[in-house]
Length: 154
Image (tube, rainbow, N blue to C red; front, side, top):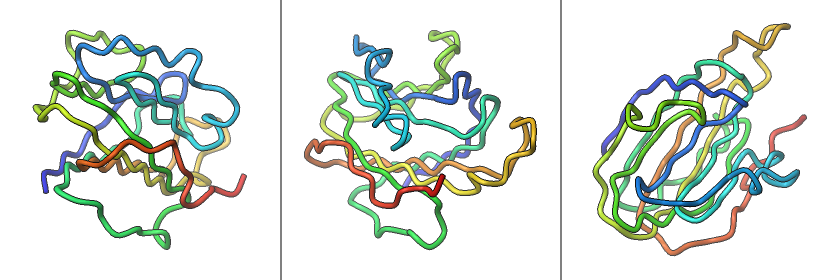
């Protein structure tokens, strides 16, 4: 397993994972259902929703196979898919300058993406501070429709 601790600017309450050459567009993907599940999907790109509209802590894990579900330690768990045609994988906030965004070498192929979010109810009154954390896990797997495994209580 390769694990990376990141801090990403989640402008507009989101960050994304994308194949560097993908032309997918998340603007139409963030519908009501995607917002509720905190995961939007388009061709070659996955949008991850966040509770805060500022810098957020993210742990990114590259795995060889599906991990066990950890529902006790997370408020919200959702899975989807990302197809990487060429790579590398770009991880960035939606308003980050694309050429400077983080890149990770991955083999082309289909990946499952699991978002597990914790501390979603810990935000300060102004929504700028909190103990929220986002674990994003990727492993090779057949594409699936986005599926909520544990829905956060709102």
